[in-house]
Structures are given as C-alpha cells and as structure tokens.
Image (cartoon, one colour):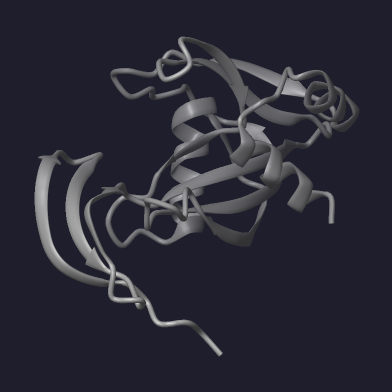
Length: 177
C-alpha cells in the first residue's frame, strides 16, 4: 500500500529560466503538518550515453563543472529537447559532443536525478559500434576534451576516484548487468 502524498497548498516561482526553475511551496503532509517553504528545483530530463566504439573503447569527455570547480571525466550527456525521444536525444548529443554516430542503440532505463527536490529524470542509453563521423558541435559553455577508455580503465577510475559523478557511475554499473 502506498502512503498518501504531500498536498501542495501554494507555489511561488522564485527563478525561471529555460534550464532551471526554483519554486517555494507550502505543503501539507499526510500527518496534517505544514511545511513552508519547501524548495523544489525543476529541470528538463536529460540523457546519459554509454557509447562504445568499433574498437571496444568507451567514449568519454573531460569538461569543467562549475559546481565542483574542476574538470570531471564523464560519459556524454545532455538535455532532452521538449518531447524528444531519449534515444534520438542520445544520438544527437553523442554526435554534438564527440562526433561519433552509427552503431546499435538500446534504451536501458531512467532514474530520478534527485528524488528529494527534483522531478527530473536521467535516461541511460547504450550505443555499441559507434564510429567517428563528423566534427563536434559544442554548446557555447561546453569545452570537452574527448577520451577513449577501455572497460578495465573505467573500473580502475571508479575505484580510485577518477570517475566520480554518481549518475555516471550508476550508468556504468547498469551497463555491466
């Protein structure tokens, strides 16, 4: 049996942009207690791509992440545009961020980004047998250095902290199943 959900009594948008909306809510819990404000962050869904090239290497990128103030190694990822299908978004993002395309594509699963305060999900898509076919097309704030890693290297990176983005580690673990 599912427990009752919180009732939203009032909403106030504090910040709104194409990438992020922050909302202050007044919520009534099933117990009758009221919480105000409870902050919610709304962002678009995004896709994470586990792409292996024809030589068996996984396509990754190193880019600056301002939230942690340093460069991180990650799998390609990006925002799903509107009602875009996750596989179509994955194909577009991989092409834009790495210049790789083709191969066979498989939707693996979606997970919540942060179930405590966000409704957004990230979708994990796997592509096998991709090849470098075009130039990259980075967004204005992207500066990505491509890297190709073997499966053993990725395992070592996770073990020693070289791959630390939790969503990307989760995707890799799902890929191993």
